Length: 113
Length: 108
Image (tube, rainbow over all chains, first blue to last red; front, side, top):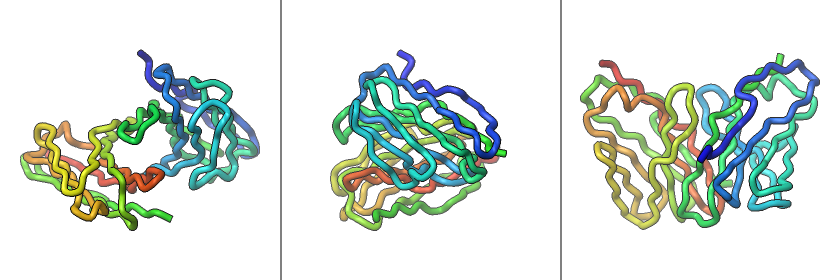
């Protein structure tokens, strides 16, 4: 059981470039989330999904896009990268039902230069 | 919107001392969850509290949920070097909001 898998683990982007951060889970979880964590700070919700075909904005969605075509995959797209998007990005998932905690991936460390 | 605040931001202790972090919400919560993030790692789910006044224990860790369901605490008894990391609470009032965490360092 792999849990939540994120790729790549590290990436350096130039200003204005685009990229997709991949997230896949094999636990058949309905809910999936993207968070960013700036140094010394907490987790800020970017986007989330309650099931395939359904996505919604979180606290800090500007500059990002997501899609959820399958239960397993929830990629995060960065368009026109900016230095302010330098951060660690975590994908998380959980089953339906509020009694369950989040399972996090190991993160993608992104630097925009 | 909902705000979740944690104090202190940092705590440095000598090994064997106790440690407590507090989490306060601006709104009444349906539940609260606690996570631990080791340095360079990802958050790992520790526990969830649901009932008013609930107390749960995991070995040296004691978690409490306030009577008004707006605050919570995590207490570690006799810290060890393996306890280092950042402890986050996540308050659920329809949506989960994470606090900024308390970073614990333990001096051997």
